Image (cartoon, rainbow, N blue to C red; front, side, top):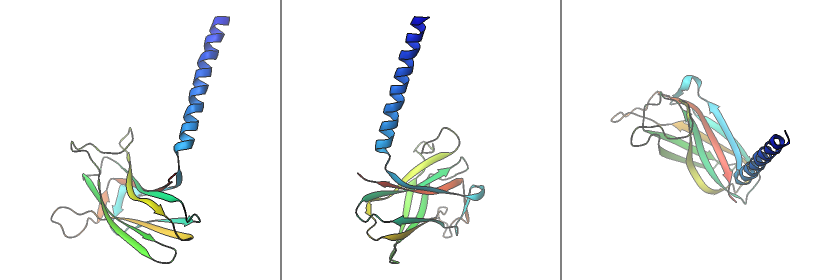
Length: 171
């Protein structure tokens, strides 16, 4: 009986040590200061539906990376994604970018993480950004997809379940 208790104690000790190291590692590498998602009703993102995020910044020194994060399901029918992303500064200055992201590998498999039909993508938007003014920054995200040789955009983009914004502070 004493031998079994020793083995259990050693196994538990190794498990506890592994969990402690994992917790320490994750806490040191996670610099996320903002991470919000908005759900897309029925996974149909209408072309006029603009997703908005408000960031209140008081840090005018630190550099940050901004990511558009989104989740898609198997109903997403394209290999890429076009987005219009804008930032409105506290002084009403505005930046608007049209961005293209790859959503599938060359073999047609969805990119992103996830073991189910839902894939989560972290799409780089801006790097080394300093929020130089104190106040509210408004970030907007809108889909801008269209079929080849079609002038008008898709009225509804199927397969996008959630759209988000993530900000990571750089060390």
